[in-house]
Length: 594
Ligand code: C2O
Image 1 (cartoon, rainbow, N blue to C red):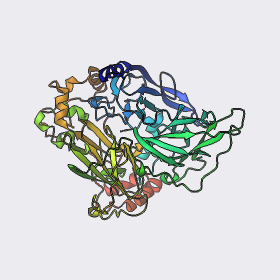
Image 2 (image 1 turned 30 degrees about the horizontal axis):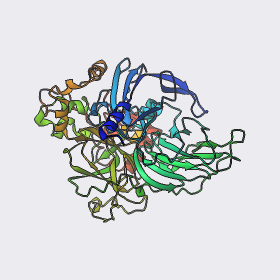
Image 3 (image 1 turned 60 degrees about the vertical axis):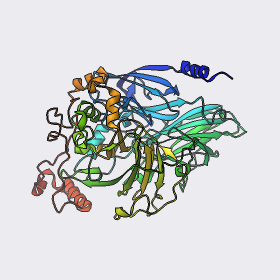
Image 4 (image 1 turned 90 degrees about the horizontal axis):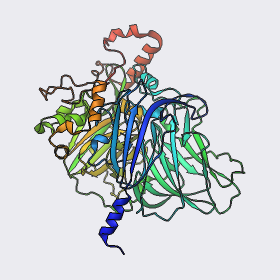
């Protein structure tokens, strides 16, 4: 047995730095085999690289935006970025959009094991292809030795049109009920017919990640059981599962043991949750099939269709570390999800009656450039950042009530939260008209002693969840629905975590303490990097230049049903001129931010 400090030194000496140059460009691809289109690739390739590190390793990515026509950024989904909030990636929050021709470097350590992914966090852009898996190996995994090989199994939905085109028609008075764009296909490992060569009797670790932008997917292995061992980077006790439901941005690590004979190959199926589509497009194949290949000389069998989806309940998972429930809540906040129209006729998403809008200055930069005594005043960040301040070290609880008929996969940056309550999917145990009754005490569920922790959770239609985390990570962190369509229409809040500790961490130089290339990207793109949400550095409480949404609909047009009727009739039969009778002077697609 070596003394502890030798082990410590050996441990340190193994940490590796992984350095990448990522030239982000348009390339041509035909992922579903149905349609060739421009996609966003890296170094001339699509799919983009898989990043694979070991706990403790450093990653340095030099991102060069060579798209020519769009800004970009990278976010490393699920990473805590403790001490490096400026490397988190969402534009308007912790950095400026990186304009075409500019480069910035991301530099952070991967201190946590498991299955992650990385994606653009700018303008809803990643479904155009800028998203890929990111795996962190754990030499100390509690499941070490249980498997002989590993596979990545990514799923996503795919669109034939490019995101800016889809967003233009989605975010419009012609779509007053907010019908989301329909995907054209499901992909597994970025195509149809993914193959996984296996040996009989062996056990494999599959890293399952939904890199999609909208729909959840059901995933199953025909003729084989899964044993869940990881959820969003948290090791769990083994749990048997035959069917997983994976929302956009969620991950599962599962063990699958192969059969002992080699006579046939077996389908792995991923199937789009069609309940999330307002209408199922004609010709959509909701399934994508991959194969466990026992014998490459044998045929690829047809997948069996499932009539009934009864997925594994992630709420029952138990983290391997046994971390008990945070039962002394210091700070509880309630967020109500509502979709509604504003005066431009467009459908918006609201948390507590406020729709998120990016501001003139990224929120982190406001925090670092403001006078110290103002950083705990949410006004400076702009009303429409939905900023919520939490204190260093406190246990924070979020009660998230979904008043909408849709499913919403909510993600918190930089933390795993405990899920202490989740109402049954569509069981009607949450009355959306009665929010006052909805607290953690009523309907008085028995809280799990060791709750499941993850970073992305499905909130059921007209349902709710109660999440808890410890504010041990000073930074500016988003909390949002991961459906890109809903992010773009405002289903986001900003957690300003331990702002004074963050100021102390970055030192007296304030925003100038940030890497020069991050600030240079702001300058190159004409984005302000000092000042309040409106860019004011003289009067920090003057928010008149902040970004605000359109006014509410005029009286009499507030009900979604009326809006839907009026707007669809107007749009379909009367044309733009006829709508002037209700005085919509700014009745056009609103553009915000950059
Ligand atoms: Cu996958 Cu805000 O992120």
